[in-house]
Structures are given as structure tokens and as C-alpha cells.
Length: 167
Image (cartoon, rainbow, N blue to C red; front, side):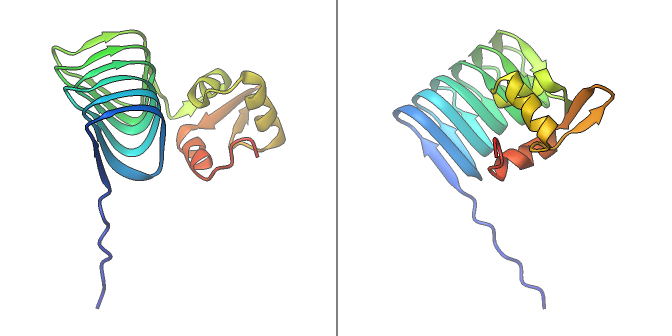
């Protein structure tokens, strides 16, 4: 007889004013309905509710925006801007869905399955010299094609999640 382990869904619903840095290493379902300022990194699903006002740099897997955001958004799997979304800042997404009525004031770059050195530096928010040093020393998962380094985004995400950045 096979036993199925029930996976508990971790849900955090924030309806308050917060400031600082929030980082979630394990997948969660995070919903922000209030005000938030700072940096936010979440694995799993992040929803910014219609009443939310957020000033932050956000990195997440699946990000759904219904409220106001000012800052940089990186969505490693999917970014959805609902009709009520107002985004001021640059977005980087693997997949993007912008509903009619949503407002985006900024630049949009699509995340590709493979990144070059400059794209990886922006993706990890580190300087170009660090990326080159890590690639040349074999510290980061990379493939050299001619004179150029290529980085598979999924391998980089696993490398970061394992805490190997800079080691």
C-alpha cells in the first residue's frame, strides 16, 4: 500500500504596513494587501492585492499584481498584471500576461532559458567582474561557447537556492 504525504500549503496573508526585507527560501503563497517598502524575495506564489501599495524590488517565482508597485520586479516563472495593476519600474519575466486596463510605466525584458554574462549580472544583481570570476573558476554552472559564457537559468536558480553564490 502506498502512502501519500500531504503537503501543507504555507499561506501568509499580510494586511498591514511593513518595511524591510522579506525573504522566503521555501515555497509559500504570500499575499500582500497593505503597504510594503523594501526588498521582497519569495519562492512560490506572490500576490499583490488590489488595495496594496508596494515600493520594493521583488524577486519571485509566480507574481500576480493587482495593486500599485514602484520598483523592479523579477518573475522567474510568470508575471501577471491584473486590470487594476499599476506598475512603475522595470520588469523581468520568463512569461508575461498583461490584462487590459493594467498600467506599466517602465521597461520589460523577457527572461530567457539561457543568459549571457550581462543578463546574468542583472538577474543576480551582481557586478560583471564577479560573474566572469565565477565562470572562469567553475564556481557557477556555465557553458563556454567560443569566447562567450552561457548560463542556463534553471541551473542558476538551483545554484542560488542551494546557497552557493560566491562560494
